[in-house]
Amino acid sequence: MRIRVGRQKLFAVVLATVFLTPVISWGQSQRAGLGSWQNPDIGLVYDLRFDLHDAERDADGNTEWTTRGFRLSSAELSVGAAIDPYARLDFNAFFSEEGAEIHELFALFPSLPLNLKLKLGQYLANFGRWNQFHTHSMPFSTEPRVMNEYFDGHLMLDGLETSWLVPIPIYTELTGGVYNGIEGHTHDALPTAEESEWGPDNPPPGCHIHDGEIHCPGNPELEEEYRATVEDPDAPVQGKTNKGVDDLAYLLRLKTSIDLGLSWGVDMGVSGIHQPNYAYSQRVPGKTYSKTGFGADITVFWTPPEANLYRNMDFGVEYFANNEEFEVKRGEQIFQQTLTRDGAFGYARFRLNRRWQFGVFGEVFEPRNGPNVEQKRYGGFLTMNISHYQYITVEFSRYEATPTADPLHMIVFQYDGVIGYHTHGSQR
Image 1 (spheres, rainbow, N blue to C red):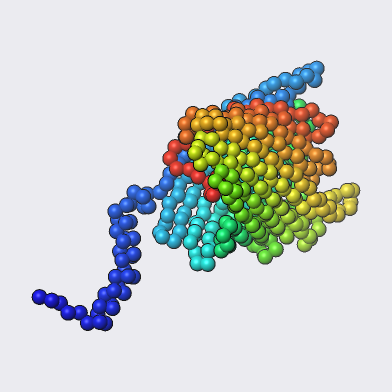
Image 2 (spheres, rainbow, N blue to C red; image 1 turned 135 degrees about the vertical axis):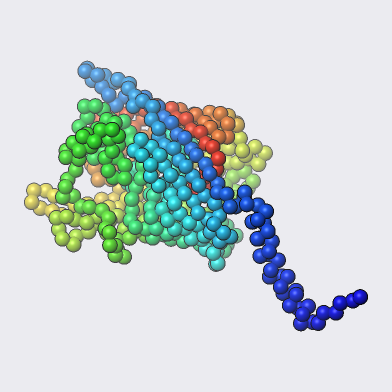
């Protein structure tokens, strides 16, 4: 028996097959593979450190090596998964001696029309290269000091970013962002001497600056004493509950990646971030002060195809500039001071084999609002990869804050262990 189907019915069947097959296949794949998309990716990173430093001097003024002891630098819990075919949700919780906090929580829409991508929530802003890395995922142990000087650490901001993949043969991405404001975030503090004079860049021993605030774990009395000694209660304040357009921060970044044959590649980018009303005067009604940050980065990668996992090299330089307006009081007079300071951080890392990698780094920069003298910091590091999931790093550094002050030498021993899934954006 033959079944006859009219042209219209046949056309309808074909259309239904074309349009419904992908939907049915997707639904079946979700039911069949619940473990791959319904269950989130979960990971935990443990970062333990021990340091030796010569910030202390004995009674005769000679160098005395001491330690801040063992320190839980961080423990990060990451949870992330695809919500549906259109979006992904990622969460990163940070645990330290100060307690627990949210580092990142954002939704990512990776495949919007016109080569667009949208990211909204709290996350590491797409500014420069090293701002995309948590400290434990950097090849060295300590953060670049120039980032702490100009931005108070990593730019971990609340807002949204839109990225456009430019339709040209060379990978080029243009990103624009809008955020609540420019705000730095760090847990990486240099050691200080017991008898040193306290100041904005020199908190008491056992204390550190975090999110612009002094923290002395287990010693609230010392926090109050530091604030009373250092902080100006009438200094300009940052942040505003009801924000206008000029209270927001705006970012623009252009990034490109070029392959130079099979073994060599280059990543380059320029970034800028600006907040018109960065701080509000408490002395002059209606007076505000702006802040602008600029960055340019270039990184070269050598990854030979025959052994790129266990023998590779990368080196690069990142330039930073900070233009900021400050309120200055001299006697009864109040006036505005605008300072433009810049600096650069460079590094080189070579992975010899599956077990060992080593490198050097150096930076030079002018203080954000202090005397116009160059600060220098340089050193080297050696890492033993116990496996793909744990490693030990030893880092030595020398920090020259001023030409007249004694340099600070520091040795850091770092142990990192990872279980499960853990990643931070597009890094290579």
